[in-house]
Length: 227
Length: 181
Image (tube, rainbow over all chains, first blue to last red; front, side, top):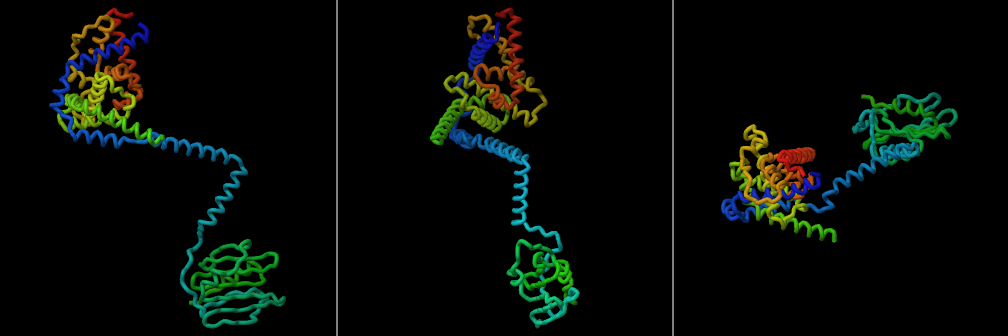
């Protein structure tokens, strides 16, 4: 007997077997007396249908979303194989990170104030001499000049606004931590002049003048408060 | 338009489901009662059965009452047995449970002209319900293997295997009767 004939016969045989089985079982009336279908059952089936109700496109939305995601990911990976694209993406990521995430691995910024009276300038480059001292109770302001009439200004003021608003040439700025405070060094190699500025919301220290970058930093780290 | 069609189709499905549950709820409880003692468990089995039927509601033909009853019977029986297994009532195998409860394999008084068909009906009645159920769902209810697997909580591979083995047993049985061909 070939498969097709056998399967046809199977279908018919199962129909007969089903009628035989039904004939052995209690009638619908007998059954409904034993376990009647009530309002409770109707609510049950309605709630089952409600729970299982899903719009056709929602059924597959999860799968479609995963496929789209995989395709996008594969496309992105493929694009990243190109060195130029890779470099551009990397550059943009660095830019974004620099713009929005400021990670400072140095000592955390202190929020305390500075005592002007106890603040001393510990180092002045060779050749510079004090020309003018405009210091008072609220500020420390000194002007130094060397033999070539190169000026060096050192100012310590009890205001954070100066630090925030102090003008800087963003192209030559190097942000750094100075004496435990946020600060920056701005230096122009062409004119050999620059400034170092640091502080917090309570005070600002600004050193500017015609001297080397290293000397500016050395002056900065040597401005200390005597305890 | 698509939304309207979807809503309409959902409403038809709900109507179909209500019709099935209304017509066969008592029968489901009766079948489940063969395996489960607690009436609330029988209700659970009927509900679970309805949930399974909802998964393949599009493939269910409600025009033939006998086939529909057979489908409800098979799914409820398997659901009730699964509940039994879940609650670990006795360490008997599925075949043993079937043999204990389904001992009524006597041929009925249906007059069958075709000798081959008669032998096949006899063989089906003697066949273990493990194979009979999957074959019934496939050949009586015209369901796909994937749908049968969903209804009986079985892997599709197992369903395929059972169909293959069941057919082999039946073929062998009618061959032994000398009715091959």
